[in-house]
Length: 339
Image (cartoon, rainbow, N blue to C red; front, side, top):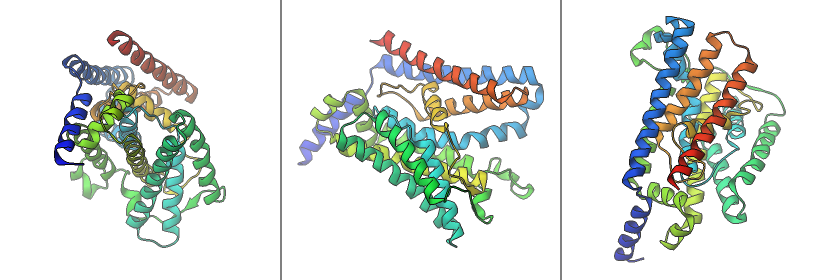
């Protein structure tokens, strides 16, 4: 492709991915509304459970518990912006914890084990993208299938039991900071999450790949006519999403300190809900990294608040389910008004 043709392609895809002013305003209203909802929910639980809910220790706990969903939500944000969805992330997180623990058990360096887990996530995401592209089957069905496959592989690899591993530097990624490291404010996992949020925001806004992903989710046929290599972008989107799920899986291992093939059941629902609450659309073409982070924080604040109030687990499940329904309903209402 000549330089002139490349410039024309970039211009067309930039215009296709560029939302109108009303969409810009709606995007910021969505993020602002989500942030306002976060403040209201946090204030409500503080009022009901007392000042201890707003303590520094509890805020630190909320951020630590958000790290896994927050990182996973960044990958899901990219996937949903591109018009896809991934139901396999919970199973993939379980597989990553098993791979990480197995690598440590075999005597590998902790960071090599973490890389192995991240690569496992990337490979899982690439397989999703490849199957969706080659089979031309909707992402919902493909990832529903790989949800079962990855869970089965995790159980097979772990011989249907947890894999214990000696404590390493990885186990300190998401735990409470020791007295000598309080200057960090948050543990490394939280800082990793914030850096990933920033990186995803820059990728979506300033890179050709990000523009192509937005264009793909806005109108796949038009994106194809503009010269975007749709299969390549799809596979790349799911690969990046899988890599981020791999990082989330390493964080999950750090929290559990074992490789558990039964962990993270239903995590995909929390991640999808976080993206939708943050202004992402199930129809594709919409979503922001910051909004998804706020959505993940809302989910964690509600779960933590329910625990503070002493509500039983079934109440938490009902509340979480209601939030998912409300988030999807609001997404549909937004599109009905703009159509």
